[in-house]
Image (cartoon, rainbow, N blue to C red; front, top):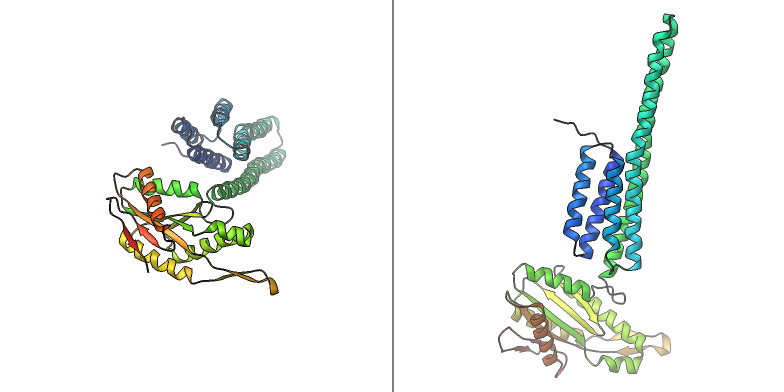
Length: 343
């Protein structure tokens, strides 16, 4: 069985290829599966051989550049991140293809010096020259190990920095900038993921009652603060496994698992009543003012067989029903009947 020799730069290149494959899946291009299959083949070649052929390295880079060049929906920021990934991969593969040649050249030069010892007749001179050549030989190996460690450490640092930037970009892409909770994109992604599990769960819509009046009476800055207050308060009352997301404007979306629709109706009726009793201060000194507001909530249950559109439509209809008298939670089951909870 062939023994695998670890090359730290090859390990970094493998990590970069995995990152590129993850990014491709995030973008969801039409050729993602085919591209990731090719990436895995390059990773296997890296694993099986310490010295990667230059042709293979060029083929790998060309594949990556061509694939991401076809993703026309990628933003300029994401394109820059992909280019940085590809540049790092190019540098890593260049090191793998060139550094081994340099190493082998030094070894060959040292071995040639060993051959020249046969021309010496003085035993003491042979011993002296042999000791020097052994030291040189060892130093060649040590230098290569140190170079590989230095190069791998530098690549690893750059990869970690890039991973951190990519993770931040992913979080920002799924976060509402004002309230700092999940946004509509995160809600849609989670809703689709939960629906694929073929389990029932509760879907809800919440919005602030008479939000336009708050903006008109107190200004848009206070209106923004009201949205932040509502998001923070609701977030504190929900469980870790629940999802609260801002849809836009004054509307929020809810996803709740492990709770029945009637239980959710009672729970949010209590929460909305508790929320309506609170007052929020803004301003300072003599300019300090109070604002009170309420929220309305519509809830329904996703059941296997629903489409994402139909379940959101039911939740929206339940919210519309709740808004008729404000400050209440209204449920709308899959059937034609709805349950209204008012406390």
